[in-house]
Length: 458
Image 1: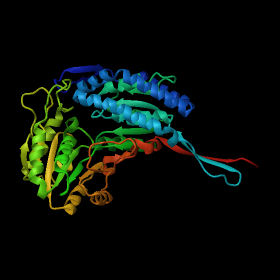
Image 2 (image 1 turned 45 degrees about the vertical axis):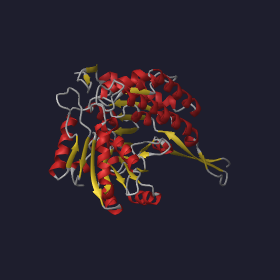
Image 3 (image 1 turned 90 degrees about the vertical axis):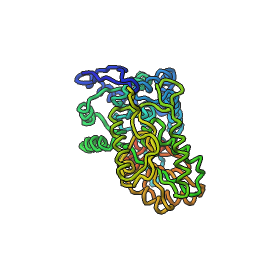
Image 4 (image 1 turned 135 degrees about the vertical axis):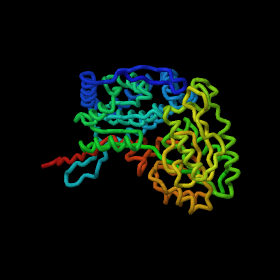
């Protein structure tokens, strides 16, 4: 049976693709392994130049790729174009820092000994990419992996396989072929690739359940893995916050990409003195979204990628109401609609033990709880098994620093949310995963240390 990709707007078939299996899959793995042996011998400056050539190939197809993203997973076309632009911004930064980050570390000579630490490529990197940001999630791995001297086997989500094809078209046929190889795989075949001794590193973005599964498989071979598994990211609106600014940004942080972001704002704690004004402003902002065809320029919120997510979100809303929360707007799927649309939703007075405050929603839901002050907010923010990002909305930097010291999360924001800076490592803790992409640490995660210890005189 082929893989059929459905358009979440109208349920039409976007494409049908055959799975890689048998001899064809073996040939792709062998080609990536052989390419890695040749690619690692190419000098760093030449590797960087070839990666830039691949990016230019990608750029020539930008509009087609953006439209394919919209058709496959429902992202509004303006946001899809923005994602394409982010690909180049992140890639440019990673290539700019590559020479300094990957240069050998030369130690002072001692007793006629030459000592240095090199950042050696791992070999073949197996990149399992998610559908929600189907371009920037894989590029976070592909560009630094290639610059560091690795090759990449890219298994994209079953919802967005055309994005995998786009990366292979851009990077797969440079001077050294098979630098990026697109794979369409079943779960069983994916496990087989992880087990293949020619694969040297695993990078996975997806669910906690999926992360556990692939990490166990990687552990069988003692290969390292980078895991980005999502979050339940909190925001605290302190008493001194710029309220209008905080409302606009936290609502956008909850609903951008229809809320399908690992670092979306998924729970909001508001100082009780600001609660009524926050709820009024948030409701107005949520009700201003315009659902529609993702390919239409005026659409500001698209359908969810998965039909099953509608049931899940409705269950979270009902659980919150059953626990005493108030539904102020939204709360259900769009009626009589072929598209997977869920109404932007505002819930007030949501207890911290409710599913909407504890389990990742991955949809346009904004659950809100009033707090008496910093200590209560901090206690609620820490009550989670996730640790991707957290945001504090305050004009007091010392307050922000105090929260940053006490919160266990990969990124702590002040007056910002739902954003990745490529100069900073993208990392998480707890059930949000392990490892780093982006920044110099993204390179260190895709290389291994090799110690050079030469006695120059005998």
